[in-house]
Image (cartoon, rainbow, N blue to C red; front, top):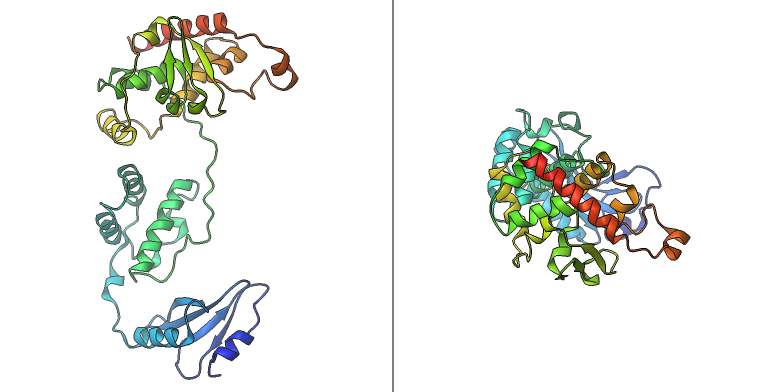
Length: 328
């Protein structure tokens, strides 16, 4: 069949799978109909490589034929013989100035684990499929390879990236190393996080009083004011100098204090976990963390208007003593 716009419009979408309609005027060229789209493709090369040219009608039949002729006439691309590791190096070099330093560092961590084999033979079984960040990294990498015509497939294209709930709790030794890091104001901020378990953004908007610290509603996740007793350990670190270089500061920290991958928010989970180990009542810990839907919620939260300031002060002082013993 010679493909025409009329015939392509008349091809039905396939409820399951896909169906190829070949064009008799250009061997290897055709249109593939799936459940939602119609796409032009061409099969070329010794290994009968299948390449998607574009979706119809976003790309016209004339444009698709022209691209198919170009691909069929092109000489075999020797770059495809490169190994995965060589291609990974090319990708990281190309994206050096395009990606955020943290993102590039994370991508490099996963891609450097690539096996020494041709890119075309890399399969899902070669990758840690239990790590969502690894799946995301390889998916992005293969998209880049396809844009640069180094491959015609992305084996991770239809693999969902599902992030589970984080469980990282820093050990006492790790807390000791972070506490010893001295690069203010970032290091002062880290100490405040260790001592109070607050969210990072809260330190952008707060008021310091004689015996309390008030985090304004704008900086709170629940958009409600949050008040903590001001302990001596926290007062010694305040006021915190204005600071906005969080990402670069964390990269610098990781270079000086190399630990298993962790994020700032893990200090909040570490605080909660250690409070439980110290026997601090759960409702007091959740009050400190401003967990509005914690152990005191629903009707109890409506009628219980106690501020728990004395209990929180005792808990924070007790926790500060614990931290002091850990970092000593």
